[in-house]
Amino acid sequence: MASSRRVAIVTGSNKGIGFAIVRGLCKLFDGDVYLTARDENRGRKALADLKKEGLNPLFHQLDISDPTSIQNLGDFLQKQYGGLDLLVNNAAHAYKMDSPAPFAEQAVVTLKVNFWDTLAVCEALFPLLRTHARVVNMSSMGSTMAYRGCSDAIKHRIKDPNITMDQIKDLMREFELAAKADQVEERGFRKSAYGTSKIGVRVMSFIQQRELAKDTQRPDVIVNSCCPGYVATDMTSHKGTKTIDEGAVTPLYLALLPPNVVSPKGEFVSEKTVQHWPS
Ligand SMILES: NC(=O)c1ccc[n+]([C@@H]2O[C@H](COP(=O)([O-])OP(=O)(O)OC[C@H]3O[C@@H](n4cnc5c(N)ncnc54)[C@H](OP(=O)(O)O)[C@@H]3O)[C@@H](O)[C@H]2O)c1
Image 1 (cartoon, rainbow, N blue to C red):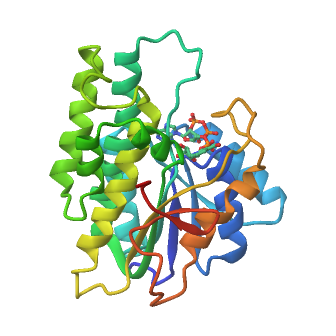
Image 2: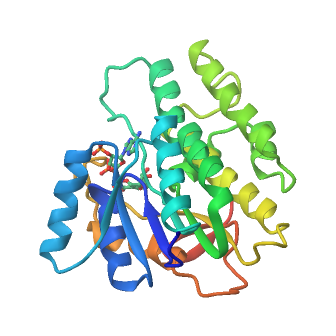
């Protein structure tokens, strides 16, 4: 019989900002908090580190690039909890600036993890979200920078308040095809695989909120995306100016939005403040 306890999942939380989000949730979230990792050993080591701090997270394996792994987590949540109350989509990939990998490869791999695999997690787990559930999708201010470099036609599509999930998927595919054809700028995009993937995450979140708001069976489910700031992690080669706990502040704020809050909903948030696409 499923427990009625509230439950939170943080993807890619064996290190970096995800790890600090789990740490914060262990202190602030009223329910079970799952640290997840694609590699069980790295995940269990991180779990042990938090337990040494007197915290009590739980562990579940999750590789967002593996549909079976996602399905296993969904089945587990259904069986053990009968639902899901908080999902933080934190796992992501970024190539280093000096990576020798061809840009086309960088575009495909980066969009796969950051956009397509994150979307796959949402598609599998959203049916489990309960009334008052919160979803936080990690985007980046890099999305704003990538947006600034796009043509007016692409900007118009990104900003369209009626954009559909099929349309943002089409835009992501267009970027991949442009990268393969070595025509990214000619076709109206900025040459940033990471920034474009985070445009996808930001727009995806906006659409998800708009659609979930129509679900009268599950009121007050809220999706937002955010930027954690420039954080010292492996992703930034530890050049970021914030600690991981400082980077966790805005995602934790969104994760813990009180019941029936009016705003933010479907927004992109940085430093706890709603940010709009530049005009
Ligand atoms: N750091 C910044 O300044 C900054 C700025 C803006 C936005 N962000 C965003 O904040 C989030 C966290 O970034 P971070 O700096 O903490 O990065 P990080 O230190 O590189 O950590 C990334 C985490 O994602 C996991 N991951 C990658 N691919 C995965 C997959 N397929 N399945 C499951 N987990 C996977 C990694 O696991 P492994 O250990 O197994 O690789 C790791 O736990 C990301 O979404 C990032 O884009 C970061």
